[in-house]
Length: 167
Image (tube, rainbow, N blue to C red; front, side):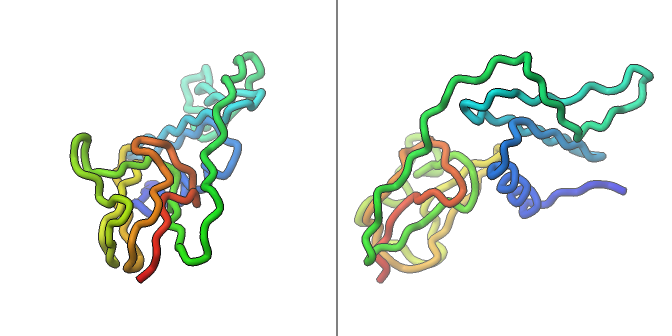
């Protein structure tokens, strides 16, 4: 049986891994290999993939083993937490873990600025996840009041990206 992943499956998998304490994940199908490595900060154990068996047969490539001999990674800064919102503003949150980009390419104008009017279906930013560029579109009409994430910054699932006054 061949293992196939579509875009939604991939996003769901990334979402599940991002909410777990898994540091490394490896999955191999007939025509693809997927490897995810994360740094969880002050965890005391590193995880590595088990090698294949010495008899030439393939080991379970999806099995992970804990190894206490690796040094713990340096602590990372806490993810940016948005200041409390106002009741008259709507939060636009990240639908996935990824890297936030305000423009389609370096040197290009941002999709939106503070004070920009936005409409349903308009691209407001890009989130890069696993080398895939995901255009995030507005789900309502409004005016951008706050942009809470710097360009090129990693974001977490559910993190507030922007605040909008709905019109």
